[in-house]
Length: 618
Image 1 (cartoon, one colour):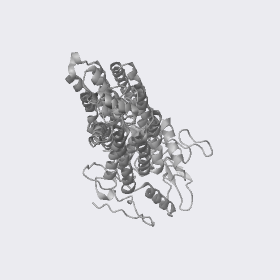
Image 2: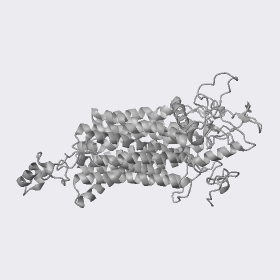
Image 3: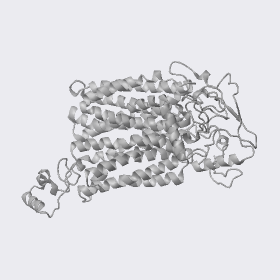
Image 4: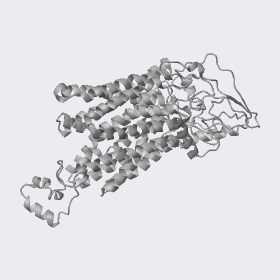
């Protein structure tokens, strides 16, 4: 089908797609322009282009974020001395016949800039064990802050601008780390690099606004899973690049700096591609969407449908999105759930190789290979979780998505408990790796089911919800890393039990108008509020029509709402006064607004309106 970008009728603005364009293309698009299928072989705009940029940008961010740990053995080497110094001249004379021995000598190793064996030679920053631990902790702190805020920013200025800006910002400290000469500078730069971990939230938002409810769980899980592969790619690719530089005659100091300089270069390139070659929403870019709204307001027959932002500044919209999400207790349930799936995964990347090398006496390379098996499941297991969420939603609506999370998260905790109890003598390496694979599968699948629920928790502030939930992953990583101080095997056991307990939060998750795992509440979803307006007057009356006696199944529309023009701009219903989807009755004129949403609150997640006082409007 044709994908011609057309000018808005009655406007000089060119660009974007008209509102009815996608609906006219056939059954593969819903009435809001969202795509109902994922065609991986296609890269056309706007849907599949956004999908591929979303996972690719996240992958490159993950590679940049985890580029440092694979070369820690080099960074722990001491700084090199001047080869013409008296010390080095004496060392070279002393070890003239056995230069390899000089590289391991405590006094003379500073004169061996090309020794690559662990504990030999020089060319690093001289990091000690405590400094490495603190650096790892700092490397996730910035992500927590960024993930909370980035969702609201995307609500205010669009995903495309947010993603391009984040990549450009992250590339600056990533380039600077290659120039660090002190531990303080190194740690500070790692904190700034950690902000690119917020790219996960933008990836989830982008696919959420491009794909319809029947496939959005799969789209979210696949894009996130492929992005998470960056941890495994970094572990394999960074050492290979380092060895390549060493084989060309560079010193350790030169090789690690050049190795860390190429990942941020890819961020700059992809940022430019995202800005110039992609779109925010099915209707075009964020600017084009706003221009079309302005054109509608000028029309004589304009009807206020609740999509006007009221002239709010982007910062106000972003802050409101975060506040709305944080007020909804269901957001924090998913925060905890994600802390003990993705948070555990991040912690595992830093601890599992050492666990295998100590508990199973594996060489460093073999231990790393065994641990990398854990990350490879992101290639398909997270997508499987998203697919399960989509499949169950077709039968049970949003309640089916809650069931999907429980089905994956409960065995995840069980398998981690079993893994922590296995030993080399009693079960052997084969049995342990088999249990590891089962644990990795359910963990990655759980991550996919969590974000299959995110768009339905607070539909008017999806960006804020995604940001807070995403930050939960890094908060969990911090806690899991701290737990490792009691010993790795006891820590894995404790984390397994906590993961098991968090899975039991799912039966308690109640969404008004939807229900819970064991109770249906879709029949209580209220009808939207209608706004009437004369052609030459401001909106002055709001009538509440009778509810549809037979609302449509919640498997197609969130919260059981039937298809109607009163839905949010991208198919999400308006959130109610206390974080629920039901619209409350308006207070008497002149009385204070009801709790939950201030008057004229503007736009929510990627254009989803937030009306006064939180009710859907037509």
